[in-house]
Image 1 (cartoon, rainbow, N blue to C red):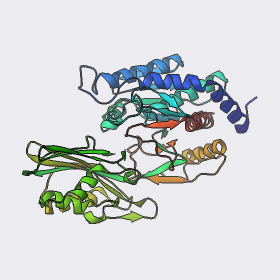
Image 2 (cartoon, one colour; image 1 turned 120 degrees about the horizontal axis):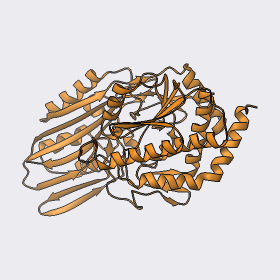
Image 3 (cartoon, helix red, strand yellow; image 1 turned 90 degrees about the vertical axis):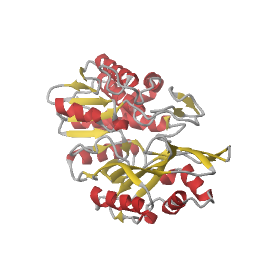
Image 4 (tube, rainbow, N blue to C red; image 1 turned 120 degrees about the vertical axis):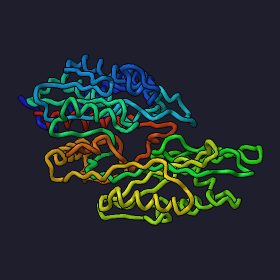
Length: 431
């Protein structure tokens, strides 16, 4: 006899309560692999670590009896059944560990009900949750009449070349979700502009500025060498799409700098402390569905006699890349900077009325015990360029899990919710 949704949810919850220690052990395995992008090697387009993480994922799929395919170490897929109707897309690469950790970054360290380590929330922890969701359905003998496919990629943090390659060789199923965003369901993602700029820099006082190494993270430290002495400005890291969750060390330095250097003074005016929406850069856009845009100075370094910077912008869906990139490039040029690189993505939107979104919202309501509504965010999830794809977890909008920062983490409570969400979602969408 087929279990009701309620009875199945109860059985799954009991199963995960019993096996949570094993889930964390698997998290520790994959999180111990440093899968940040490194020097490519033959057959390993994103480096040794990324390839090792994909091999780990493939091995887990084989243990589950799924049909596993490796796509030239760009991605691996693992399929249950024929003609899968559901795809679950997650990534096993991570951003570099960086500094400032209280725990070993390449491990799953549990303290006071929280699991710390690089990838805990983005996306290694959620990837393990997906695998254990499948394992639970198998061990509880839950019948599935439709197939599904899990796809693990190895280059989400580096620009999604993994999925571009994957799609040339294998099509996505008609429904796709990723655990690379927020609950309840993230069906609307802002557009993005990533821009780097520079200008000749000669300063009698300042010999070096070192702040930020990746464009999509708020820098938590800014080292400035001036007059032979080093000064360290400390802030708090956050994801580039959520600058309000951090304290930008680059902006702190610019606000404190009192010399007459025109380039630094210009940047101080363009990026004042406490401003997140780019108003001083002649933007400040917002719309009813997606809310206010964000604009953050995420890198500021001296290199080769030049002052080099990076900017992360997330803009509302009523704007487009050409408009926003045009404004920010003109503002920078007006202030003496040259544009080195500029790239981005248009906004992504999926109607809340689709069967996929409605089913996921029903699962959320049952697992969480409360009704949820689709949400919009600035983060670019793994399905941003996938037609009809949405994000389903892995965190909640009110959580700050230090994604891309030191002490990235997920609470055991949220991990259990992940497990229950994904198992119930697969069961309902594939019955």
